[in-house]
Amino acid sequence: MRFVDEYRDPDLARALAARVASLAEPGRHYKIMEVCGGHTHAIYRFGVHDFLPETIELVHGPGCPVCVIPMGRVDDAIAIAEAHDDVIMTCFGDMMRVPGSTGSFLDANARGADIRMVYSPLDALRIARDNPDRQVIFYAIGFETTAPSTALTLVRAKREGITNFSVFCNHVTIIPAIKAILDSPDLRLDAFIGPGHVSTVIGCRPYEFVPARHRKPVVCAGFEPLDVLESIAWIMQQFADGRCEVENQYARVVPWDGNQQALAVMADTFELRPHFEWRGLGFISHSALKVSERYADFDTELRYDVPGVRVADPKSCQCGEVLKGVLKPWECKVFGTACTPETPIGTCMVSSEGACAAYYNYGRYAKKRLHVEV
Amino acid sequence: MTARGTAVDGGPAGMDHSADGGLLPVLGTPPRTAPDTGAACSIDDDGCITCGDVAVALTVEEVGEYDAVCRDDAGRAETVATELVGPLTPGDRVLVHARVALERLAPEGRH
Image (cartoon, each protein chain N blue to C red):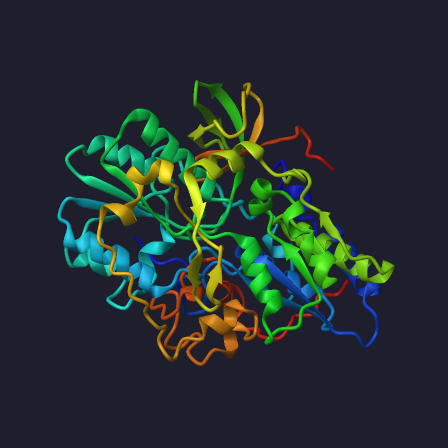
């Protein structure tokens, strides 16, 4: 299969793994964070970590769009959906199971709310067209990969004069999260595997502050196993060469300057929020998007009273530490016991990009690496 | 609707690598692809690809004013918004997320 098979070749994987091992300095421990949940998923799914020496530790970052949504924002959406009989709330699949303090969207549906799963915000707009007597809300989540699709949907809604559609915007941006991690006293990192599809939109330049100010390499990576392994090899090569810069391993997809058309549409339809709460990371300045004033007629938060109550995570849940890379999933007290994909307590166990779900689904019987011979 | 990753006796569902395998057992694993046109996002099997910020490469078949019919390598078609990538022609490859084309792909990649 084009663009797939060539990135799953086991012989190439072994060669790359051997190169990584040869570049590792004896006695040095390397901590490399994969920012994106897609990479976390790929690492566990394909067993990439089993190809690495013990001295290279992969730390899972906060780039899972579902995982970083705080419980209060789930409660807000449920409150709107339950208070207004004419509302159809729409959201992506994994969000349906994220627990709020009064249950998930699925629980709210069981109580009588109308919350529907969509694959694209454009599907939510279609539901609005098909139901002119109902108010359709799209519960928007995601990083810069997903924000353009919401932005484009807003443009189409305005162009078509659709008045029964609005967006409850929870889009977040990746750069402030990386800054927050770099400023965190809990964590010492040596390098970053940069997000792949987010970088398709924002490009590679926004990461340049990481090597410039923090002296840590960033390699934007694809999502196939050889992409991840090669990115680690590039990082190790930077260490060996004494270099520290941003590199683009995923150049077959990621333009260095991003997608300017997508960024322009986002700039038209969204504004930065002064603050936004991230699960596990707390409030981060200028880290999230709201619907812009030009599109205020489509802003759910202006159409409806939003409770906006801040809700603390359950005490037993340690998603925050997992999201910051301080804890491994299996080190959480409730991992795999009280918290499973069927009965998630925390968001990291909900989305397949969440470190806990990825680890639970692919590797919970082998906490130690399997040491593939290279 | 079933929960993804359901654990069953004998091992976790969907486990792709094993103690003696590393990458080897996953060869041939189908890539995560978009559902057919009009299908809803699924939380079955391998999770919600839109939530996961997963984008897939599709081939353009028919071009309209704002949309194009595209097909994935498994033969499934979907209608994709194309306003963010400029004019397309049949045969172009595009990276698609949530039914929106995010980037035009170079014919054989940029490598």
